[in-house]
Image (spheres, rainbow, N blue to C red):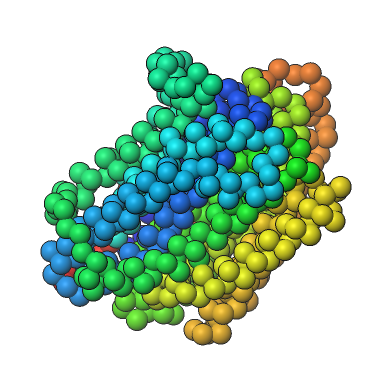
Length: 544
């Protein structure tokens, strides 16, 4: 099978399970917003959930994979299989010990951890509730680390479906705990002043994360990995992964760190109540696209690029990147336009229920506007960083991420104090979007300077066609929104139908013009929509 074929098959499989996971994640978030709205209690829960979730996204979302997969694939290629599996076994226990210590410290110093996230005084956040919920949720970092390691090992063997599916069960567990049949018995064991739905949801987060680990162990056991205790800090492979992990943790998670910065600025007393929750919900809506395609593609790319780099096929690796960037941009550019124009109907249909009222919708839609502006850049970053990691370079993305972080802080502060009147709770979102473009451009320029042309001309020509198609789509979308009378007192079912029709008409216009302009990404994208079998790495790539 060709490189393109393997990537598309792997990415389509990951996208399939990720799409289901995002739907379940939406149902989970809908339950949360229905129960808590954008109240101070909701901000307390989101704050507590965000802290370990930052670690989840930085490890499971890339840092451990970025540092472990290149080393592990090298072992699979150059050493006996048992040595490679021994490395995975030692890493499993080493990560477990480190994460157990982190989890314990996070619980002990829960108040201090929460304060770090609320440097501006917390606004209307319920401090004591946030500290209490953080103590319940924070132990999940132990399972997050183990799950990320297992996922990276399975991806190295060409197994993508099972790791991608674990998040589905995480979301289902949290949803189950949001209902009284499970939540009420739990609340009886809570202190009286903390007996609210947020506490039951916190317990669901912890149990759901543990299930993600349990699901992946049998798959690796069938491939020969043993799980007997084997802690080793001096093993050469472990030390090599450790040297890569520190910079990768920062570089791959710069988007999450920037969201952490956004959360801090959202706690400013100048921000309206519910700003933390509005940013969280807006980010979740955007990730319906980002997670389904960009993350799926980047997950499939890292093992493939690592094998190409190990074989010295740098030019082939660069072509793989260009192909992936064009495919993902073909999706994210029109998606960004659609989210900008239909932001209010989307938030209203998806979340305006229970305690999530019209004011909550307005607040969230405003944040979504500015996050959507950066969607293509967020996706592009997830595709270019695997090129660095496949060459065992985790320092450069970390250094660039540090520059981007500084820029985000400066922009957040400037927007908060000088443009808050115009941007309101959208200030953190706009700062992050601008930072994302800066981050990607700098990474692109540095890699091109080191390794030569990256096909920028072909990429630019393709992007030009995509922008033209997206502009036509925007005109159709705007007209559909104008003549639909969406807010004219229709019930939820009617609004959902109108929203689906507007999206369908807009997407049809985009694809139609793409066909007229003969965008080569159109047939390649359609391959992503086919039902795919798990991609298998060629035997010669993994056998000694």
